[in-house]
Amino acid sequence: MPDLSNAMDTNESADQSQASSSFEQILPAQSAAIYREFQAGRVLVRDLWDSNRSELRANPLYNLLYNHLSHFRTFYEHLGSELVFNESGAFFFLKESSDDENEEHDENAFRVQVILLLIGRYFARSGRDLEYLGRPDAGLNEQDMSALASDDEYQEILRAARFEKGVPEALDYLDKRHLLFRAGAGRCFLSSAGLYFLQELVREYEQG
Image (cartoon, rainbow, N blue to C red):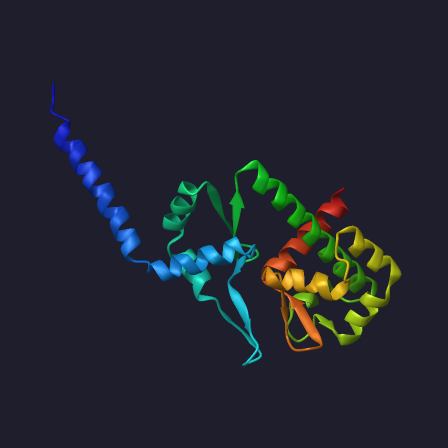
């Protein structure tokens, strides 16, 4: 019989070499920064809002994930999670696998859906295309936010989703998760991920 030990040793050495090379290409501080983003419940979007320059800029953590996708997928798989890449919305998010985390994820997803549907409903009723919600020069202005906050029906919906402080708390919830950006004190707009989720909700509603 042929001796397979040398071939097996060679394969194992190649695998170890590839794994070592993969880890050497990425600084621990970079991996830690990505992990903190996911632990905070954020999605990693391709572009972030730069309030100093008042423009969208490339997100270096997104680019790192994109350029080393196979590495990070394997890495998070070993941690019991699934790294999901959404090409249409240009964002990454982490899908947890344990039952407790799924319950928490479901609650967070429900609260996000409530806010997005409320914003989308209001925006559509004002006669504007939902695409404008994803534009830094459009989105929601100060008058829009005041109108949302003064609508009793909307406030009741938000309270049912446990946003006791109403619209400001709901917008902060999206902001902390990179689903919405604030382009100044009186304007905000949806990130690519926020707009994608809203469009998916509208599509599901129309089909249902």
